[in-house]
Image (cartoon, rainbow, N blue to C red):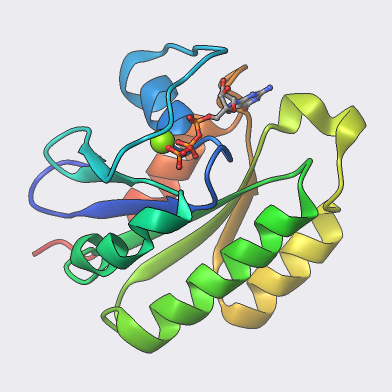
Length: 159
Ligand code: GTP
Ligand code: MG
């Protein structure tokens, strides 16, 4: 089923990994080279919440993930520290979110594979260990973006 109805999805991850860009690509089929950093959180559609990755907004995140049915935790394949941040978000979700939440790890900026710092194998292994869905995508070229939302939608329970 499509991501519609009352099911809520939240995007989490370090600032600048491309959360807003992924949603913009999915919802509007657009990409900007110069996106402004999100302030607080943005309500993208009826069901998609795009949170701000900047550290000063971190305390707001529980407000968005607590009632979410799915979380997409994004890192940037060209940034090893962004995977560390994704690991810490996943640990926080495991402690604080609804146990039934569907979580997907997404490595963005696949178009910059020549600057890769995180191997596919490392991220896949982590996802397997934690029982997460996993994909590498590019919000710029749109590669894999629709699949992220389709896979999440398939996993989400229908109320
Ligand atoms: P915050 O709102 O601060 O948490 O950041 P964000 O995760 O929403 O990142 P945003 O979508 O604003 O993207 C940050 C920068 O990365 C922008 O300059 C984007 O153009 C760029 N960017 C996002 N996705 C991609 C991608 O797939 N490939 C490339 N090359 N650049 C990307
Ligand atoms: Mg943003």
